[in-house]
Image (cartoon, rainbow, N blue to C red; front, side, top):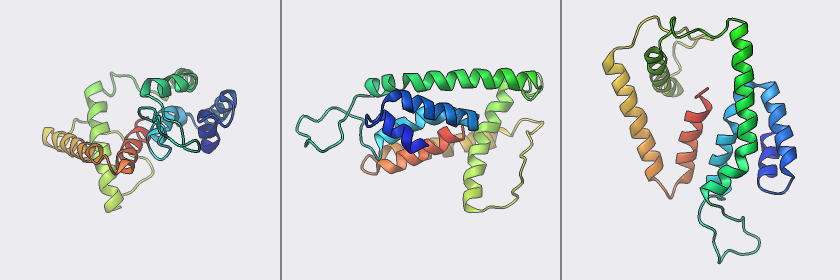
Length: 182
């Protein structure tokens, strides 16, 4: 389905078909709200649609667009994602599936997110202590652990973004961050 959406975004299919595809994705799995942002990553690499328009490009090459233009073409999809996020929060709150800030404070949620990214990376290399549900910690993490996770994430981000000739590194890393940020 994602490939159909990309084809709609790149002009080989009408955009309204792409909106229908995203609606189907959102109905099947509400976590697809990040998909318009992931499409921007595809525009960067491998589609190579992001950047200054190339006047000397051959007629068969993919046209390039500025970032504001690419963002503008994603607005209908972003609106669908926003509507899905609001609907999901309303339904989940009514079903008492969303815990309020009194139970899990904002600092606790932010720390858990940062440390979870780092731990998930570790499990990719050493898959130990895997369980289906990862319970939310009832205490704050030690400052050294949060600091180390922040430094690691910033270091990986800097390396991925500095390797401009290896665009797939930036796309892969940002895909990892965006896909798990839900």
